[in-house]
Length: 332
Image (cartoon, rainbow, N blue to C red; front, side):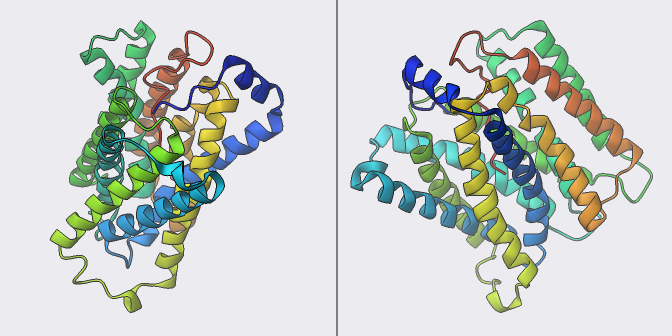
């Protein structure tokens, strides 16, 4: 998504006053919080209806962000025209309802059917690879090494989801659901840089979250989740996980990410794309004993290597410029 276009002088002034310690603090926040959201989703859907929990998460986070913007900037802070509103609603539907909603569905369900949180994170890591394919389909010509990284990443994807003989094999249907989520997220990310969005990324996020929450709520109602929802039957553990997703995943980490986009090189900020999966796999194994098989290690390592190659070769050509891959945002 396009951010406001500050003058080069103002941007340089902000970067000059930014310390490496502050940049790395923000990076660690993004690494850990976004990497941990996959595990938090798994815990939330233990006793919460999956799509309803996602709708609640984005509705509350969006309203909080809207209230903060209005308090800090005044009554006109959220003003957009119809075209900007429609664009934000479309992107929010693709990113949050399609992208996040399908991940939540894939992580819900009984053992043997649900996708482990670490595997989900590794599959979602293919988003930068899919965006490169979308760019190529519309006439862009990424560097050769970018295509090498894309090929490597998809080889890792195949290795990860190949049927295995053990009980710890990745559920194929769940894996395909996450791949569909990554595709939806990729299309939303791709479009966000090419259609007329609200100029302020925070304002755009408010409308994206509200639109995503509304679509998720409608689909949840169609699935019967509202009728079956009984707050008293939800565990404290799931409520806490949902609160964590609202605050840590959707507000704190996103704010740190937007700040980084204005104060750090995009090649450094983009490293979240291959650090988050490693964090998710480690937390899943340590906290809920998700299995890490040799197949997961091999496939995951190849995917992360492919994404790392794409991110490092997709460096901006000039100051302040951002490539299509660099624009990809991850707010799981």
